[in-house]
Image 1 (cartoon, rainbow, N blue to C red):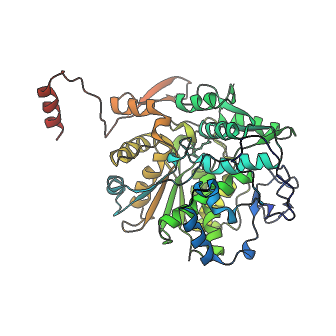
Image 2: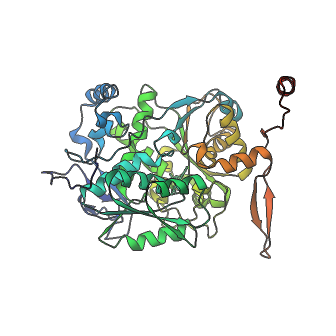
Length: 468
Ligand code: F0G
């Protein structure tokens, strides 16, 4: 584990390269080039590991299983345990908080709510900083150390920043986080402060913060840890490996994730594809992405595509119209111009999944239903279950399909939302054409408001009886 900033020794050969995802360009770059987009065409980059050299997949399965019982820090991490498939040369100056190792729960009430026989929920909110970001951040901050960077930076709706701040703290690096002022939950903001990051509250929304990051990325003293950084995807793809181990290598029919920047779909698809290339699985699951209605540029684009023309994701639309003023109480996915939309959309199209949007009411009720299963997630994560219900209703998912939903963040990231829902005071501002703003109430179909109960045994028993 890294306690101090360090620079790894130069490796003899690099394990893989960075490649532009646009097939018409295909430019490649070394793993040590500090680059976030293709310098030839401006396209998105991904890492190509050249997996052909790693064909002994049976041995790899056994090795990973054995490591799960080991106490070596590299094996305790649910990311570094799969290091054969990560683009780092030994010795890796790895920065870890022992991320990954998240539970895969059955959610019987959520399943019934969606119209499914069974539903499993992979709770990425059980990571060290309470969100899925940690699996990618361990890789990105490790790469920052490999490159000898002193300062790491990101724009965030709150979870990336919490994660970056924590991992930078572990590595002894300076961290700066750009947050849209007044739009981050108190819990997430508190994390970045406590982990010692410079917190820059920007007058604007997440997309404005992201634009600033793209400018700051030119500064050689700064390493950008947003998801445009392909090393983030490398760490995050291990979620697919861990999920398949937990499923005893039986591929589910569907995997469903919430969508903001479209990184979950990108990373999971890459992970599944690598397992397929290695012969560890027989096919890949259908990947679907669920956005919040008020922040759903990719769902809108997806709905406009003719499936016969775009079915396999070989060709992608050149542009996507952003949502100028994204709106949702699921603040984690309040994003109008997702930076990874092309990679994420390609993943969905290749797998035969869908991108759809759900309403604020649908998210809120799905969240409460997940809670009834004893599983606490933040609002953005609940879009997953809300979307599954819709995908079952339209017949894309069948009742007896095997389905896994990814829950991306912990409930305690946003307890104010939960409290308002159960007390019946949850609302979102809605602006009319004349510019006037009115609060739109979100009714809690599964409300569970606290009761004032007299301090007597009889009163408590009476309250319990009423609820039976
Ligand atoms: N769920 C949660 C809890 C998130 O924090 C985010 C993104 C998403 C879903 C969307 O994920 O990019 O895979 O579509 N949060 C970023 C942040 C933007 O800054 O914390 P995606």
